[in-house]
Length: 273
Length: 254
Ligand SMILES: [Zn+2]
Ligand SMILES: [Zn+2]
Image 1: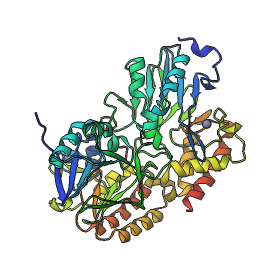
Image 2: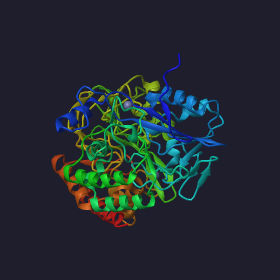
Image 3: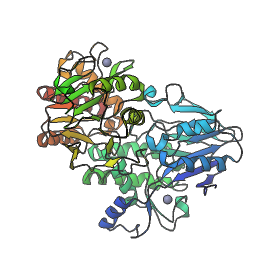
Image 4: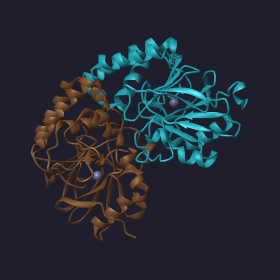
């Protein structure tokens, strides 16, 4: 039996394939205790993994693979989104289990697919990426109608890491940054399709866990880096790996992130993820 | 009781730190020097457990060495600092070799970390693993959100995952940190942290160092045992911390 596809188009040629995983009861309890306005008791709360398929006129590229718990989700979503075409490139944003966990399965399913890895970092061979072709800030990959660039990741965990942009639609793929939980009736949506606004509290819930190190920073340094991103990527939409795509008014989210880092620096981490 | 740990450890297999705790060191060569990708073997009342599984890159060597050190029996439990591949990469093959030993991990959602069979421990708690008590600590120096540091209450060895590494010269693979040539040692501490924890560029060095000192006050370690560097004996810890605080100042000043 074919499983229900968990993919959709977010811009011409750009598909989101989403893994929501199970209800995050621990996070739900934490936000209920804080009395946030965006979560209703009894609703599912998800922190997703997103993979993005970029299907150009000539070539196709998948950015990340979802987690090992979602092998079927990514393979089914990919097949659906490719619609009979082959997969030409698989780029791993960083070799973290929830991002890279299906690399081997995808390469087996699409034997002609070329594996790409971030240029940054020194330890590719420890991640089965020793043989992968590397991409970095000096490279551009033209898929035909979609042009990819690979800016340095500003906010990251592991050193082997890259962000990505698609220059025709002006979309910035921020991987672990600008994620946030969503409710069970918001799966696969874009932020502009929600009935509510994403506020600072949702962003804080995610970053106070994933970017636990915000508690050890000088917030002004992070804010300066965020302000620089807001200038460099003014007018870009944002496609995060653990949130919903932000297609409009991304400037608002850069500003919200400056509040988030100050809050985590003041209050400490929110837990683990 | 296995009895294996009662004989002197063959130094080509492992280096004994404290009673019942052995460092099984492996190295990965980088252009600027070696970085360790080690594991630690801990004796329990009934057998052995491992702290981390090492990288698949060293799979054959680790399987052979841990096999010999345990008299061929392998391990009965594994405590995972975090799911990063150089720490978790050998879990599937070790389970094929030695059976379905217990996996202990601190991640909030084990499924998405590829560890559906793991027993979850919570940071802050003390738990008995194979009858030996370990305390799980929130690590100030880490890359992944779900990383835990692990304090072995019996030996007072503190396992610190991705913190406290040092890049070392290719002829010093089996030296403890205190045995490294002090010339270049501070540079090795700097290079490791600059490369491994990119967020330190945003750090407030005082916040990081205060958090570390608070941990050492509550859990005074006999050894600090990193996965990516030589172990640091209690006597050398102040010297290491001085090098570390200077390294973080340098990284944060970029
Ligand atoms: Zn969902
Ligand atoms: Zn070495």
